[in-house]
Image (cartoon, rainbow over all chains, first blue to last red; front, side, top):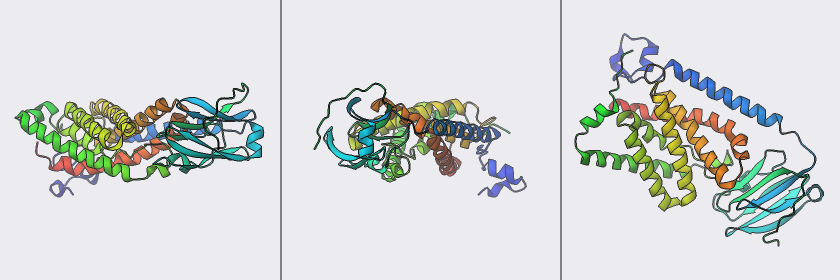
Length: 150
Length: 181
């Protein structure tokens, strides 16, 4: 790679090319460490707060408005329903206190690929349909208006 | 270690005519656009289920321009790329590209202040990659009113960005080495 850099150390050659561009520097290692620590701390923080909790309800939002709330008894019983959001058709499935977007007519299918959401903090989102499926504390029960159920 | 890269102002001076600068930035915008479209084809959504999330391959161009021409050229290319993407892929990807690209550029500019004494090209690149992802997810969290997105997926996104940022630097290195300035 650096044919003109004969005589220099391996580290020197790997850090600098023939124009002397500084590829690696000690501060880069610091950045790697800092970003990795931030990632690990955030990961631990998120996982530690994700113990299964009672009184959680699954909330389905479209255009930032709650269109359906699934209470504990419904989540235990299980079932499916369909809804339309911003021109896309979704099928939501729930059972054993888990919820997922079973199928969707949106182009990217990210919401379907997310799979089951079961713990606080889990969420499935679909940007084309502006749809969010997430958990909320169910102490305040506020039944929203269903869009299309069929 | 000697300062080997000239300042962007000196380089801009060498690109003497405005026409050549426009043509050069046009080429860079075209390259960035191709990389963005390539980015769209990589199904990273299967790994990280955040809608619209991208690897940020176009950051190679931003990184190169930041070192070769200066932040203004990098900014112009990002805006042009995002505007063309708006016509091709729609407003959602446009907002993601713009928020990720601009935040990445801002952070890369800040880290570049420490180049070459404190940080190398890799440091500038990984900082850009991390904040490219942060910018995109912040936009998604804002659009969907789902701040949980940020905390839920940020750890994975940071780790992925360390890999993609390193690859971006490796990709930009031979170009920077061969660039005549």
